[in-house]
Image: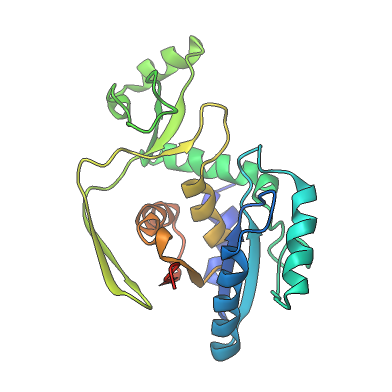
Length: 246
């Protein structure tokens, strides 16, 4: 089945309401930033209408521990915080837990590989942060096949589109970034698990997200995710980044 038809056909349906995404990592204890972020999202929803979609980011297996969610949900409800769709409430775009959507992410990575928007990196440091040293993007199909037959470990990297990029933030206005000499980010680790950038980009489309309201510490990560979303053929959400210091 065509990737875009399978996972992004919903994007062709007009969105009749704002769909505001909040994501969190199930840590051992509830981080104060989560209820604070949800309060900003609730204010936006109650002022402009829409639904809050709560998503669990647990692609890291060390974080994929369901018992932690019970503590988080009970704490948030005790604080009087609410949302409209999520793992505890369900909804039309379930599942809302990333560890339950792994097949979707691998399919997305395969789609990007087929478009030459991603590539297998066989460098010894493929799980590091310094990028690809072996020019793996330019390996021929025969070279890639030979490496696969030798069972050489690899990660999958996204090919960054160099040059200036910009987007309009609902708080900060026009945000610009120059993509020069930036390492191509890993989107699938050597163990086959997706990373933050890929899973986030895929889910924004699959969950039909229209707005992302989050802390300013994610201001620049939007550039990579927007590029991936563009290459996956999904509509781009609007961003609002609030201060995390005040």
